[in-house]
Image 1 (cartoon, rainbow, N blue to C red):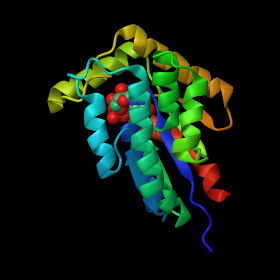
Image 2 (image 1 turned 90 degrees about the vertical axis):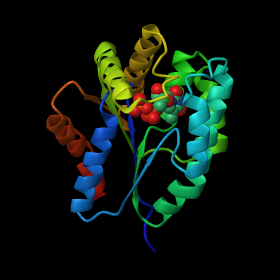
Image 3 (image 1 turned 45 degrees about the vertical axis):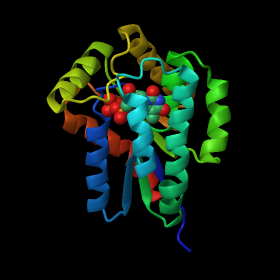
Length: 214
Ligand code: TYD
């Protein structure tokens, strides 16, 4: 019988560089002979990608925080059931660009819905699945937003509803991630994303390597 694969999530404010770090880690793990499955939220599955368009469409200004939270978890429920749990059951490693910690930080804290509500819906949507390790790529709010805005302009991105929130919203997001890392130090590692990509990747690798031996 294969043992369950490892589940690792990447988190961080918009423009922190977490997606680049996820790709670099996936490549390094494959070089080390691991079978890796990559996913991202909101989105992931084909159904999740349809929900993502509704969530991030900059015209959907009237969307309520609770609607936003439930749609995030609708994506996640589909991803957990259709892709993540089967991959883990086959013994593959799963890397996810965002997971429930994003909902905790963005909807629970920055939107003010509260952690209790997030964990309550998480129990239904994720059926007990939690990451083995979470890497939070930390970046100061101004730098992160500048990076996200230049990327959006480059790609003529229309899925910008959340990037366009006030700077105070993004500051709450950053603080909430820092608090999460302080609250759950054994699962959540805070990594300084202001340094060169290779240096950040090395620190990511140092956090992941011990889990590969276990
Ligand atoms: P993402 O596609 O990861 O964009 P970025 O690369 O800019 O981080 O996420 C899109 C937005 O959705 C981002 O602003 C974070 C937000 N988000 C939530 O508010 N709650 C969630 O549960 C998730 C997964 C994302």
